[in-house]
Amino acid sequence: MGNTATKFRKALVSGDEALAWQLYEGNPQFRESLDPNASYGEQYQHNTPLHYACRHAMTRLLRKSKWNDALNSDALKDHPLT
Image 1 (cartoon, helix red, strand yellow):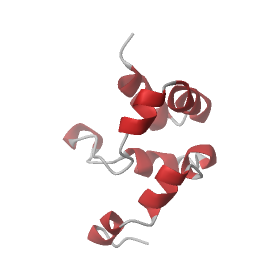
Image 2 (image 1 turned 60 degrees about the vertical axis):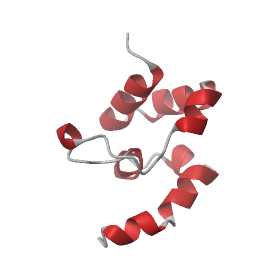
Image 3 (image 1 turned 30 degrees about the vertical axis):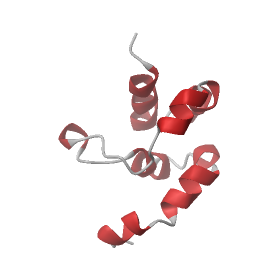
Image 4 (image 1 turned 180 degrees about the horizontal axis):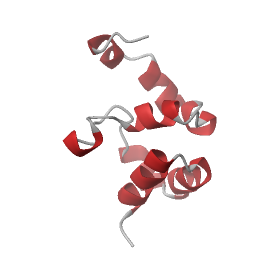
């Protein structure tokens, strides 16, 4: 089964935008606590939810203001990749 965060992470990693969106929109508590710039750890090469959303072109997630703000944050300055 797993909790919402685990299901969301698995949906992001596999590129399942529909499931990721359903989990994100369906749980206001999870939506408020999720940090798009938080690393998933060494097992996931320190990728973040934002990395996976960009990698799989999950436009619905990327258009949300919290995610959009994360794209424009200073956190990206730590890893100046193009």
